[in-house]
Amino acid sequence: MTEKKLPLASSTLIDFAKRNGTPFHIYDGIAIRKNAENMLSAFSWSDGFINYFAVKALPNVNILRLLASAGFGADCSSLPELLLAKEAGLSGEKIMFTSNDTADEEFRAAYEIGAVLNLDDITHIDHVIRSCGKLPELISFRYNPGSERTGNAIIGNPVEAKYGVPHRDIIKCYEIARDNGVKRFMLHTMVASNELEEDYIVETARMLFSLVAEIHDKTGIKIERIDLGGGIGIPYRPEDTAISFDHLSKRIHELYEEMIEKKNLAPLKLSFECGRCITGPYGYLVSKVRHVTHKYKDYVGLDATMADLMRPAMYGAYHHITVLGKEDVLHDHIYDVTGSLCENNDKFAVDRALPEIDEGDYIVIHDTGAHGHSMGFNYNAKLRHAEYLILDDGIYRIRRDETYEDYIRTMLSTPEKITDR
Ligand SMILES: *Cc1c(COP(=O)(O)O)cnc(C)c1O
Image 1: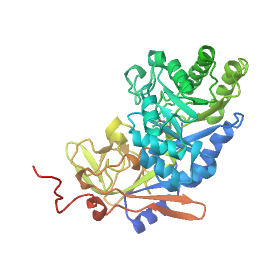
Image 2 (image 1 turned 90 degrees about the horizontal axis):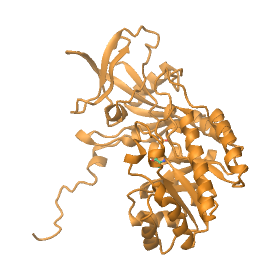
Image 3 (image 1 turned 90 degrees about the vertical axis):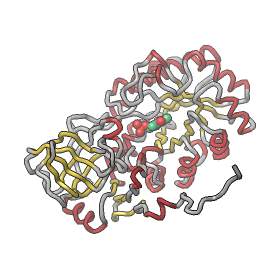
Image 4 (image 1 turned 45 degrees about the vertical axis):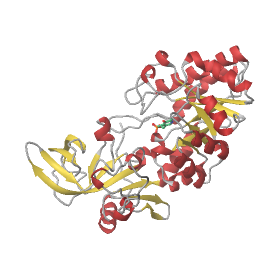
């Protein structure tokens, strides 16, 4: 069970919303920092442990700075994400560059920044050599275990997944890398998304520990660091329970002693690249009720849309909803909670039991701190909304509302002739 808390008193949030307008995402920076520190301290037995925060989860430079100051790195997969990480003060091996259908220019930019290149396929080796002149001193490969693992709903079955090097190529990848002058080696995988089963993450560690041993046996190559990927879930539903970093770490430590230390494969550094479980629970989408309508069903229409939070429409994901000021009122009404897009799946909740809602009520949609604002888009010419950050000494605006001028910035009102027909 997980208590669904608010980041500020209900009345403070209503006041803030009235004064600054809705909708907006607000992040609890104090809780995010504490959470990051808890993760690092849970894994402090592991020398050199790091979490490369997955930038795509919450790509705001202020968040990246906050996490960098707590000791985190960044996991990037595009040039703009790399530039954001750099802007946040990160550089070199604090940045992981996980590619899949990556452009050569992006490989080159990551190489120049000194980021760890994490290659998705054996054929990418040649692309890196061509675009960067040679392979870097340190390289990582992303492993796809295929039918050895089952995967989960969001990331899909590994056999069907477009990501990663299959088992039949993985040994060859390290040999080719070594033959091309690579001196240091990392191994990466990402087989889970929003996973709340601790066993699944522990099994991922077991899988990589055993692959580290296999690579060593077959090639003599000693892997210096493994990256267990992201994918640690969060309790979106009140009846869900979060994974405990302390407990997870303890179990991975036991495996490490048995599979790495006893087999003389130590030291092997560990890392994750979690996004969701770092910031997800500490973000809130605050929105105002525009209309309450009674059709064949009862609808609560908000000023936010799926352009502010796509997960419910995209995955049917549950996001908890609190009606501010009505926390203790009986939840005896059933509503669909909707946005204003011309898309019938623009719904934050379907058949949700809530207190009776009136026009003008303020509501909070929970757990929007990861894969929330970042998945936003401009369909229906919806403009993206502001983000705020709560810190010890106050609340900061860390992104302003998009304006019409922002929206049309790339549009050419006077057509630019490119060529004769
Ligand atoms: C999305 C992604 C992550 C982060 O996943 P979370 O579910 O946010 O922890 C990490 N690594 C890679 C390669 C990803 O694609």
